[in-house]
Image (cartoon, rainbow, N blue to C red; front, side, top):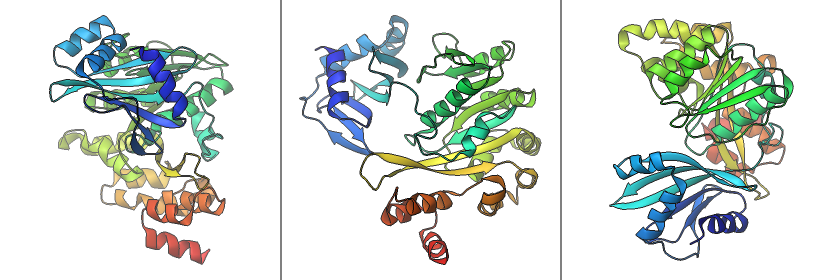
Length: 356
């Protein structure tokens, strides 16, 4: 089997795919517009998936995998695309999930995201989080924001990822990309080291644990602009996740720290386009104003953050997901059916649309 030829053929036959699945006993599968579909390439054997793993994994990672560990790596089809790859075992056999990383980085305009994200990309300091469920496009949105900074300002940008996804070419900025497992043993250690490397902007691929969150907050506190992701579905859950990661006796102090350093939260989901050409992000955008800071500090008022967002669209360019869905529907980008299905509160969404 020629792995590169197979991947190249799948990418060509299924434009717009997001993931490729390889599993023993099944034909290769692709995820397209959120749906998993089986291809007709023939069923995979254990020998084939084992061979794929060996081709994709560097020797040190293959040894790690042979000891029973799942592995994350990147795999490149030269001049075509990259894949973020997870290789694991299930029922004693090897399986692989490849996330497609397109060549080039789409602009915020191409993603049809609100203009305020350009302003957020150029903040001087603080913590900016992009959140959402797996596969909602968080990495792409962050890459577009980093690329906007790269094209706009003479900055030093450091990315810490596992593995590296989008590759940046220096424009006005200088971009250094650190891969966990290859260039550094952990997010937290690399993040601590990066503070001695004269950064203006730091991208942390994911805030996974207390140590990484604590160091990220301190990096923002010391005057850096820090971008990262969390698997939370809205701004309120994001604040609570940051706080709840810490022991109870520290949580009130963490609330003050989050209030002082969190600058924006972009929480998104992908919805089908009306023209059938892929999906478009619908985003909740929180800008941390003085009022929002007070709501973060007071645990009893944190749940009211969505009300602040809904009332702050004109003054601060905040928006709820439902407000963005309304805009997308009015512009003809999505259908009413899709908007209602994706809305946080469909009845309130429909009522607000009728009121307008």
